[in-house]
Image (tube, rainbow, N blue to C red; front, side, top):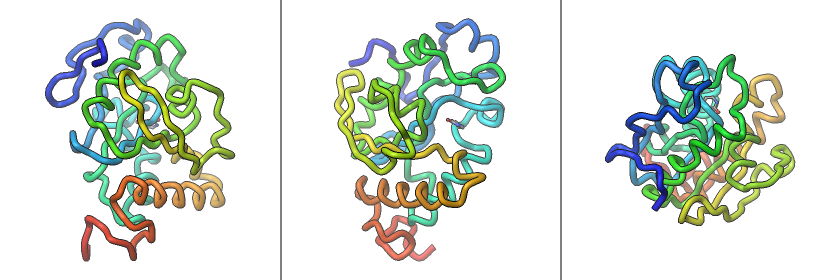
Length: 203
Ligand code: URA
């Protein structure tokens, strides 16, 4: 098991490993969603909206993700959503390497406990962090790899960050396609989006 422990709700009870983030955060933003989720999305770090709400992906990027999931036939509440780093970096900068390393044990513990069918990395930072190499996300989106995280080996699907879709419709189509692919690979749908088998039923 990972050395960095989480409580029974998969939450970090307290952490002061990153002085700059302790300064910039209002709270620790833990993952949300079922503790037996088959599909887990991993982002970079909370932004201002997430820091305020205490929940990952609740701003514009969250709306893009929620809409793509809904169009694929899956509710946000059916999946787990978490981040590589659980505290908001100052001025929404990318997390530094030492901050990613400091938080890695929490993500490893979360993934070890969840043991999901599929982990989807949203954007460059989580893709590179979990694959431990440079990743060209626009080229590798939709590709599946094995990744070693803590004591677990997870099946990982590279995906664009939802924010990348906000100004470019072609990126939006690619993002939505990868989300459909993710829901099918995780066994939540048959991959045909709203026409497929869905936990939303007739909703
Ligand atoms: N972007 C991320 O990577 N994570 C969030 O929680 C919100 C936006």
